[in-house]
Length: 444
Image 1 (cartoon, rainbow, N blue to C red):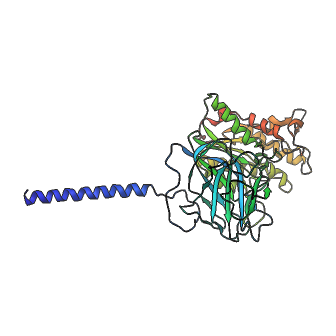
Image 2 (tube, rainbow, N blue to C red; image 1 turned 60 degrees about the vertical axis):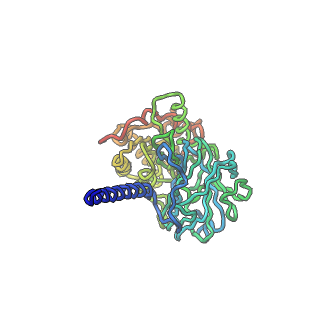
């Protein structure tokens, strides 16, 4: 071999080594992105997610909006106790991840241990044997959630069925201050002293509560859903006065309707349905508190709709509390402007908006002729098609045909405002599933 040929061979070898090194670097870099991180996580090495690569897309299977600070937790929070939230899935998946919120905390929340498991059955804190998975955050079992912040866990491999109860447990050994929670969950959850995060028996959970603490979302990597439907509203969406532990809110009924329709071969989009209702919520006004509790619809819309995974449709049923709780009465044009702002935000993200008419409130102590007039004005504009992409007429579906200013007795839970289970089922039945097809209108 001549010297010239030897140099050429050496150059070729060097070029091959450089090319292989570059390809390896690009491959590794592509697999370690952290685009899903939403808050400061705890110390510890960053390791790959426990979940293997799998077909499917990330969708919401359950959610609950953070509402405020739980009364009585201002000093110690849940220090030295385990919180076991019970949530019900709308669709299944092969992997799961959670979102924890410290929105209403005044100091950092330190979680040193968190887990996810399938419940052994309804109405129990015990887990199915062998389903408990330890959760990590950027590879660490400890996570620090800043006051006002939230954090997304790593994914864990677990076959999560549709229509299942899932146990999400957290443990904090340090003072955490006010607990961010969602009241009136209509679902029994649990708490107990000590670190019971991986306890499958559930015997240590001595406290039962009707609210969710810290947990605001459960997502799954799903092969049975291609997108998420978010129900965005007030207590009528939150399911107030529905039967506890029965999943009898109208979004629950809607999800079951869609699952049944898909199972029978109907040509419909494969979507999950999640609930972002807050009791007492208004379009335009926040409740009191620092930070402001029960944030107005126009302020929480990004957090609860736009930032959720693969949202395709948002169903808005909001506005009745603006009418009932505004001193005197709200200007109907201001209320409609607020609703149109929600639609504008959704359209900017390619999300279709289905909106509901405002249901009757009966002759409650806060009812006046002027307020009824506002409701009728808003409903007329909604029915005209000049507010939403599509309209569900909840008012027509549930009102008394002989006295349309009040709920029909068979649908009334007894307070003249909130439906019973039968009423919530009727709301879901009035939703035309064909509305799930198509995309957002370019312009209303």
